[in-house]
Image (cartoon, rainbow, N blue to C red; front, side):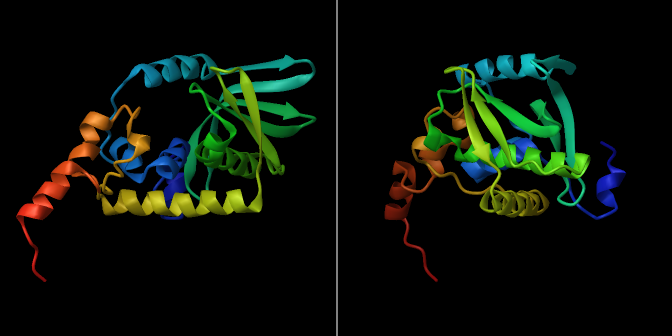
Length: 214
């Protein structure tokens, strides 16, 4: 994707992966996409291995369905850019499939669904064909969760894209959340949510020692 296609409309490119990161945790998104910080744990290493396999650029047919792996994606209107793990063309209609390693339950798919919907919006602009649905594939359970690309989900993609771009332009890290999302996050030691997040013991201690004046 050429940079000048974005600069014509004055848009800072936003990676599709940032949509899920921001939906899950804005600070995680900022650490990865603003600070360019990334650390590995057992979950990210396994996820990386899965994505390396599906991101090998390939095109083939399976049971009469054309399949594209590692397909570059973009949307000029929103300034989105990225790569699809896999896109099936079912009777000519694009059907994006986003691969995830973790043991997802149906209620856990909401953040990945934002990224998937972003892929659908890119495919619509690229092909001129409406993309009504896609799927999140969970490698651990070998299960697909089909996602309808609803107007509500499309609106969330647009709002999240605007929020991510604003964060990147502002260049400021959001505060840590310090909740159950932090437990298995690979960026936990860099983020330090237990030390500086809301509800942390260290923060409570500092508040008890010092009384702020207006």
